[in-house]
Image (cartoon, rainbow, N blue to C red; front, side):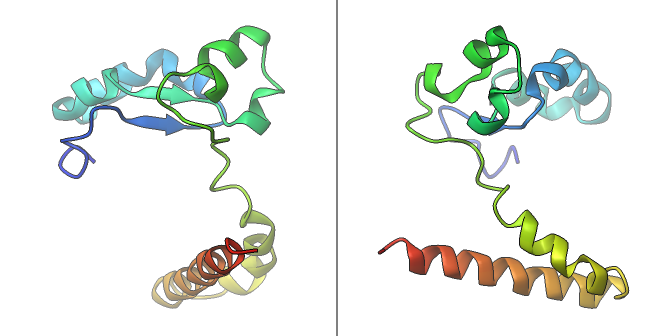
Length: 122
């Protein structure tokens, strides 16, 4: 992560329980990967908008996208939509060996991304 994002001025990360996870985040990385601790300290951490409604008001303000400078108009839920379709594939995927399972997951996610791109024009 550090090498690929070295020149970015901001690094924004979205996770549905950041308000809890962030408390010890730098401590977790301190022992395992001290070389990226500075990057972790500079992260802008947010709770996805849909998930934020289940949190306390203070979490919504501190970690919410609408109140964050530089986050733009987004919701942070980009990884959530394909889960329902991926769950359907789970029965087949769990019977596969690691290699074919990875290929199948790549195919499913590529299909999902392709469909998403095609729907942009509508």
